[in-house]
Amino acid sequence: MTSWLVSIFMIAGMLPAAGAAGAELALTVPDKLPAAGQSFSATVELKNNPGVNAVQFELTFNKSAVTCTKITNGPILRDMLSASNPDTSSGAKIAAAGLTTATADGKIATFDFTVKNPNINADFALDDVILSDIDGNSIVYSITLNGKAGSTGGNSGSTGGSSGGTTAPSKPDITPDVPDTNPTTPDTGAVSTEKVFSDVPSTYWAHDSISKAAKQGIVSGYTDGTFGPDKRVTRAQFVTMLWNLAGKPDADARTAFTDVPSTYWGAKQIAWAAKNGYVTGKTISTFEPESSITREQAVAILFRYSGGQSGAELGLTGIYDAQFTDSSRISGYAKNAVYWAVYNGVVSGVTDKTIVPGGYASRAQTAVMFLRYADKIA
Image (cartoon, rainbow, N blue to C red; front, side, top):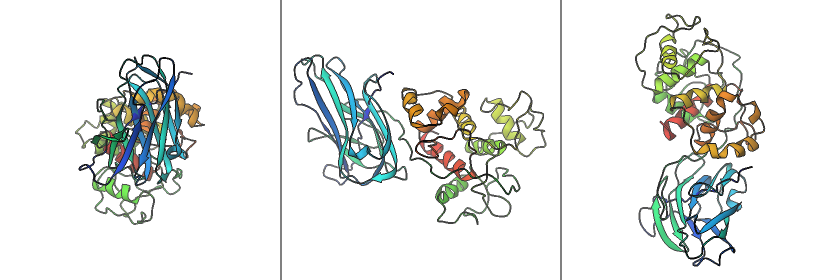
């Protein structure tokens, strides 16, 4: 199997000024390279840890000077799902996320190197760094190199390399899908006047996300004032939420699907999505608007809406395949979309070992999905 690039995207935290409180990413490397052919290690530690749930960064270096041979997770990542690649185009890369918060200070990772040419500056730097807490909020941090202050930043930055934006992996969604056992009037996409629904108490796991999605006009409730958070989302409802997210663009209500007449409540939304290539039918002539949408179908639609282009997650395919025991159940058409969504934090596993691609998406899970998409990608 191809060796994985361990990209340590060093967290250039948005510290207001030197000496201000915040987490510290401490990169330690040799002051001078040993002789050609000899080995050495570099470490990245997290100090003043306020509580981290997701870490991603790249350790960049001059590949003419050194070669990264191995990445070893430190105690900070002990209880996290992680992926690493020691041989990316610009260095070594690592990404990790957990269900629980790591609160102690300690080592994030150790990088083993072999010297190729000791007469060339290795130019070690931390780049494209992301640190986030359990709610997905960015953590304020600074960077030090061998104990000396480096650059500072927010969601991305470096100690000397180029900056760039990537998205931290999200913590797995451990709430299972619940079948719809009490169907009611379909959600037509109109924004409910009730932003706090009678069946979504403040203690419900997705209360804040549902309320926020409703306020943004992405989702709405039923006519009886409920939201039905654990009900399955139909294909027509999901397309309507996407249409809402897109700003409700005007469209002709006529479609080529025999089961979506122009009088159907979601005809315009489905026609818009089909015309733009975001959705396809279940058959050549049918859309099945009232069928429940699966998790892989949902992310495939979002993937197409985003342009359908894979990114850095392609380098983690083997790791995701090994991590998710049901990865073989992902349909061929949806695999790139599913891993794109996992990498970018749009969705996560139903458990830390399963992605459940054929499972049905609940209305609560879908609200969270759209909010994550809007925050991280849109």
